[in-house]
Length: 114
Length: 115
Image (cartoon, rainbow over all chains, first blue to last red; front, side, top):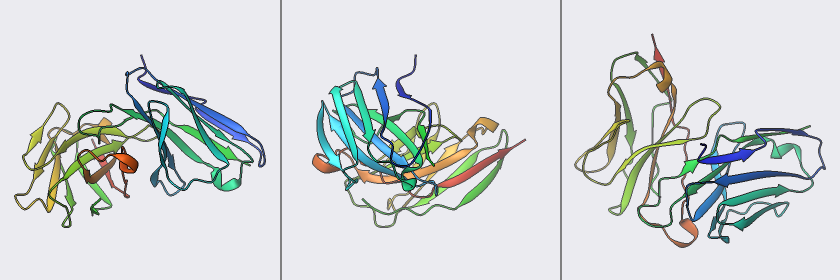
């Protein structure tokens, strides 16, 4: 049973389109994240939500809008897609209490913008 | 969070120990050392973390020098499935507020385990 699952795994779309990536975790964690891995393989945090509340927004363009309907889900909606948005997007979760560096990542969603 | 320095790549023979070094000379007293790895086409995977003492779990051992300025991740019996990029990350233990869960990944070390 997958702990952190993302859909879709692959997404190919045209510039200017709007797309969403969904994430669900069944670990009972309070905190969820979106990380982006670019073509140079650098992983960087975009957002984090704690119990449906936004707590980190790393100066991501406002074309990116995370939405957390409940603490088990964190979706990422991207408007007006640009070529530079092509990347692998990873969802992650972690427990709220205790040492906070242990994150559980999903398998990633590879977005290609043509 | 303190900056880390890792070798770009390393090789290891299958069945032998893989020792991956990490320098973090500017580490602060309240910062932990974390290790993650990323196998090709998968999400990063937590391996181990420590503050001062050496740590061991079912995946690896973490050796931290007494001055805490460097550490070594040890995979005792490397297998082909351990081929991955290994990231050493230093961060405060319980960063709240806007730092919560914020891991700063560098370029890591590409470990190749060969038969």
